[in-house]
Each structure stands twice: as structure tokens, then as C-alpha cells.
Amino acid sequence: MRFASVAFLLALAWSAAASAEQRSDEFLSCLAGIKQAAHSAGISPAITEAALKDVKEPAERVLKLSEVQPETKFHIWDYLGFLVDDQRIDDGKAKMAEHDALLRAVEERYGVNRYVVAAVWGVETDYGRAVGRNFLPHALTTMVCKNDHRTEFWQKQLIAALQLVERGDLQLEKLYGSWAGAFGQTQFIPTTYEHFAVDFDGDGKRDLVDNVADALGSTANYLRGNGWQPGASWLIEVKLPAGYNGPTGRKNKASLSTWTQRGITRWDGSPLRGQGSAGLLLPAGKEGPAFLTFKNFDAIWTYNRAESYALAISHLADRMAGYPAFRTPWPTDDLGLSRAQRYRLQELLIAEGYDIGEADGKIGSRSQAAIRKHEEKLGWEPTGRAGTKIFKALGGE
Ligand code: CA
Image 1 (cartoon, rainbow, N blue to C red):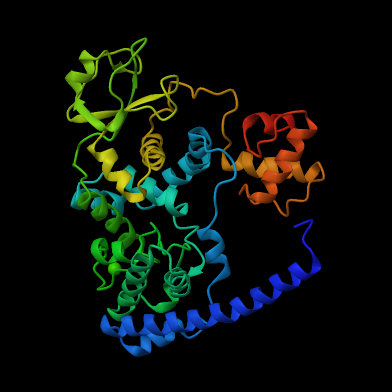
Image 2 (cartoon, rainbow, N blue to C red):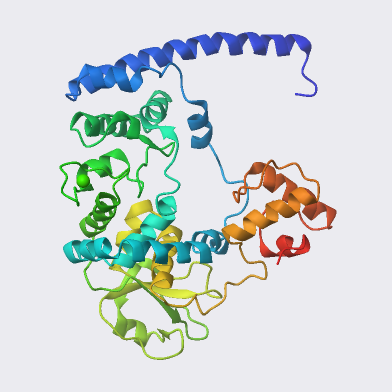
């Protein structure tokens, strides 16, 4: 852009204005199409009109969030560092005590381990504290009208969300969630809600937004419906024999006796025991912690379709149940930070004079830029990553 001529810039501005108008026409006609589809799906015009009355243009924030690409390299120890930190473990224990009778009733009815149900709640919304602030009809309309290869998916979500209102499960003003339509205490997308939500407290409504009983019951119902086996394991930490060269991967399942033949033991070298078939998961390669993952791990995986996610849920559940942290260290000298440490890191960056706004514990683009600057100042390679090294270099403890 530095060498662009004035004429070129003017032409660009003109075409931007013209295409903005065109975009607006396209959006309005897309909106009309959505109303028609809602009508065909049996949703009363009053509900559709109320849901879309303030939707005049795409939600900029949703468009932005839908295009976010992580700037820094993803490390499993960063991800687990903030998702399974002491705060979330302690909060989870307190929440489990508060809802003990409910969680036991949920476990009894669906056979899903209550620590795992609570861990999903903790990771998805920090036990109901962070449920998302995007109005679903607006967010989902934005995604439908973006007209990419997933239009049909987004439209299904939008119609399913309106159907929840049509059926009386929820009122419109409860439809707030993530840009991608996940909402409620355990972040179901509307079609998942439609299929797996249950009225656990029996008041006639399936309310996963404000009713903890319905939310936790529905989460267990979802896991059971996606392959959870009552009483079975989800994850155990194991040890590889020196020079292990055998099969790996969650899907390469074998019996525990086969794994024993391959030289795998429990983390402390004792023989494997228990039932079921499992895959060998090495989230950071052969030098890091190794796990056997069972079918229940796969059930958790379906919740977000990521092994790192399933590992976070599995480990948080184990930690809340009193089991220790992984025994094998991650293969790094620069571990990830907890949320409290991220917050402190931001305070330290602010104290150094970096303009990153207010500390909130979320490492966004401004925090990353400040970290990069400070890394450069220290003569390090600029990564923008919030790790232990930069934290300590800034005086964190
Ligand atoms: Ca209910």
C-alpha cells in the first residue's frame, strides 16, 4: 500500500462503497430467505419477527471472531495450563459440593461420572460464569448470510434456536452465547439442544441457560448418547518402554493385555489393570506424558472434536476427584500459565509501560504484541506467547 497512487486509492474507496451497498442488499434478501425458511419450519411469524427485528446488518464482532486465526503456536501445555489451573479445580470442588445431590442424581440416571459432567461445565463456561454475549438470532443470521460452505449448517442452528422458543423451552432473551451458536451453562449448539437437552428438574421446560439441573442432566445425557460406558475408565497415564516404536493414536485401540505385551505399564512401572480397549495418546510426542484413552475419552471428544479438549476435561475431572497432576513432565522448559498468572503477567506488562488496556487474564492481540516487544527487548526471539519464561523475566512468581 505504501506505493499505491492516489487514483488507485480513490478507486478502491469507491468500489468499497459500492460493494457495501450491494452487501446490504444481499443481507436483506438473505434475511427474507431466513424468514421464509423459519415459516416453513413451523415457527410462528411473531417469534421470527421478534427474533430478527433488530437484525439489520451482519454482526461485525461475529464476522471477526469467525475469522480469528491463532497468532501464536499452539502448545498443549499452554492449553491445559489455563483450562486445568488450581482456580478451576478449587471452584469445581466447591461447585460439586454445592450441587452434590444433583450431580449424584445425574450420575445415577445416566451412568456418566459426575466429575466428568462437572468438568465439562467448568471448561465450557467456568461453571456458568462465562456463557457468551452474542444474541444467537443475530450471530447465526450473520453466519447464514456470510454464504460460505456451511450455510446449511448455520441455518439449521438458527431454526433450531427459534424452535426452542416456539416450543416454550426458552424465551428469546435467553438466546445469548458464543459467536458460533453454542449457549447455556454447558454450551450446546441449538441442534444438540434439540436432540439431547432434558428437563431434569421436571418443571416442564428444558432450560440449559439458567437451570443448572437441566444443564448438567443434559450434558450427561449427551455423553451417554455419544458412547459413554457407565463405570468404565476414560484416561490413565502410562509409561512407554525405552525406544517404543509401536502403534499410537486414540483410534488405534487394543486391549490392555496387548498394550502390556507392547511394554506399556502404568506411569510408575506397575502392570496395567482394568477393562476395556484403549488407544495410546501422546499429546506432545514420545518425550511427554503418555496416556491410554478409553471409549469414554472418545465420548468426551465428541463434545468439541479435539483431543486436547478431551484431555482437559479428563484431567480436570481427575484433579477434582483428588488425583494428582500428570507425573511425566511436558517436554519444555517454558510451561504454560494459569489464569491467575496470565492476569499477573498483564499487570507486569502494564507496569513496564506497555499499553494493553486493562488486565483481564485473557491474552489477546495487544498482550501478545507487548510480549513480542518485550521478548525483543530481552534479545529473545519474538513469539508473543505467554509462558513461564517471559513471566519470570518480568518478575512474576
Ligand atoms: Ca427444567
